[in-house]
Image (cartoon, rainbow, N blue to C red; front, side):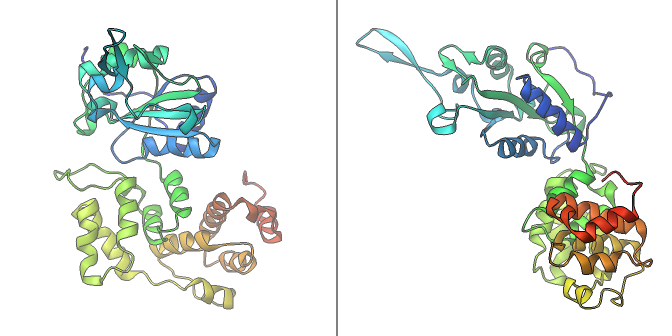
Length: 343
């Protein structure tokens, strides 16, 4: 295997990478997502499968042996030949559907023999007697060597069979994703809006716990109902002490009105002055805005004290989460006030 230098070319956000992946799917071109740990590379393929209504298989290639891909030979004594038993993870058309996405995850954690087995799978969609159903799109995801994630060199012969897409952590895509999750709340997305550089950071010596989109999602779930004296320790265990200290300070000072308070008196309800509080408030409103309360919430966020930038960010986040909001009079009034925006 030739020595591979760190990639220094085009990198994609999750949004642009997904658009590119859809194009490659239409062209049936195997595609490889490279990126640091925890940015959601394989999750993107899962979302595509859900949106397309097709099957999905996630194969942890780093845990497999060559015979897992090629099949295990067993004797057929009657015919005096060897037959090959196919591993259970291969898609079955009757059970998994005629179309789907099969992800070979952690591909850079595999041995050279395993990579050699995948040459034929990716190019010809078969290896020996094992055939990948023609409607299934083979893709891969892996960490980069410069991210200190135990990634190995990828064989140039295997690499040449893929289209390669480099991905970086993406605040906009992650916040939008978080807004759609039932168990994420609004505090962590609000904090990340305020401190976007902490969405993903591998700075520092402790690489056991560090900030990634995946670990911040874990923070959002673990702090629900967490006692104050445990908060810092819980967050530090997931994202490291530096990021945890900043988040804990953010949580100690935050003081927001709730949705009911705002809707009861949208023209009088208090608006916090601190930008960090406004980021959290913006995320809270965009998360809970619906067609029944959009009018009152719009009256609140269009006040001068809220700020035009925060108003726009709130409405755009809310309308991306729930596109039916764009059909309301309140949204139409907002669009007329902001005709220079591309909505």
